Length: 78
Image (cartoon, rainbow, N blue to C red; front, side, top):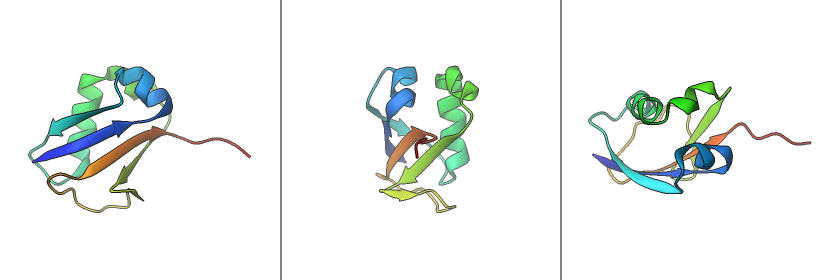
């Protein structure tokens, strides 16, 4: 299945792109994480990376073809 992945803030700086289409063979977000960490090893240095699927924070839901995935760093602020 193909999913659209969008990168934000420092994650975008690491990947050098705003978004890309990635093909995965599983509906498990762990496969996407594996692909991203292999493609962009600097992501492994990040303390926390967060994911949202179709504008909802990831909380265990399964991926579907054509999902829109947002990848962003931990947000800080006060």
